[in-house]
Each structure stands twice: as C-alpha cells, then as structure tokens.
Length: 197
Ligand code: ITT
Image: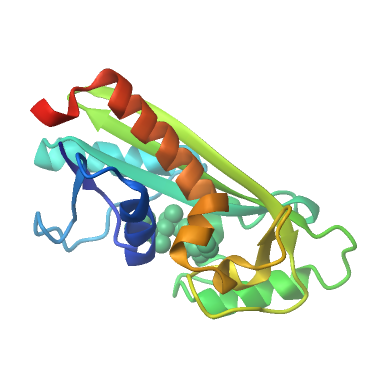
C-alpha cells in the first residue's frame, strides 16, 4: 500500500519510516511536487492534523496521513502546545524555542510535561485519528545532539536519557509519535488488505 505522509519535517518522516512494515510505502510531498506550506491555522493539535490531511486529499485526491505534535508543559498551562514550532516566533527556530521554555520554567518547581501527537489518516473519504502521548520532565539544561525540536530538554518517564541522547530506535520505543503511528499501523493491518492496495 502506498500512502502519502504530508510532512515537511524530515525527522518526523524518518522516525515513522523506521517503524512502518514493508507493506506500507511512504510517498513524500516532494514526490507529488508540493513545495508550498500546508496551512496550519487551527487552535488545536487535532485541528491542525485534520487541516493538513484534508488539504492534501482535496488537492491531490490521494490517500494520505498527516500528524501534528506539540509539547505541553503542566506549569505553563499546556504551553507551547499547538504553538510548539513557533513558540519564540514565526521564524521557527528550535534553539530559540528551547531558550524560551527554559526561561519560563526558571522559577517553577513542577517541570512535568508531555509530548502529544495526533495522526489523521484519510482513506477515500473516511478520516481516522490516532493519538500518542509520552509523559516526562523538562531538564534544566540541554543534553544530547540527536533529533529535533525540544528533544534535548525532554526526558521521558522511566528513562535517564533525553530524546536527543537516543538513536531513532530508542526514541521510537518511548515516543508520542511512535505510539500514534503504531495504532495507525495496527488499524491498517486489521482493516485493509495491505498487499492488494
Ligand atoms: P509538519 O510539516 O509535519 O507540519 P512541523 O515541524 O511544522 O512539520 P508541527 O507543526 O507538528 O511540525 O510542529 C511541531 C513542533 O513541535 C516541532 O516543530 C517541534 O518543535 C515540536 N515537536 C514535535 N514533535 C517533536 C519531537 O518528537 N521532538 C521534539 N520536538 C517535537
């Protein structure tokens, strides 16, 4: 089965490719020649995932999935949340976003947070949603060089490494994205004859 993954984020694409069974092949936005940004104007993570998948289906008429993810910090009332990519501004800079989080948490004792992913899958005209959440802690300082976004300051529960200290397989053992993707894979394996699509 061929499915378009509507993302411009190569890290996300690599993480998901790492766990997909070989019967599911990913097509990228590059493969369909889409260079413009897909609008993400919703106030929720779920709304953005739906917006991305509907945009692709309406314009290209192909089965696809999209995901939106965010970091939700308890003592910041769920911020940065849906604004995770642009927390420190529209220039979308991971380093600036991390600095802002660390600054806002400076006086806070509670550093609990969660990463959340919602995947929206559109097959023909039907939409299916899959959620993945991982709880953890925001560290005082960055640790590790791998990954992207807030990986270097997030340590998942029951682990002593940040996501940025893990390789892709280790991150996929814990991550919000792999939890949502594994639910989608189980759904596809149960409901669709992958070898005939
Ligand atoms: P799309 O093309 O898929 O939209 P994006 O990078 O714009 O890619 P989002 O809109 O979902 O992705 O933005 C989510 C932001 O949340 C992302 O830029 C990171 O800052 C952060 N984030 C999401 N998942 C993350 C992860 O696994 N590790 C670290 N940061 C993550």
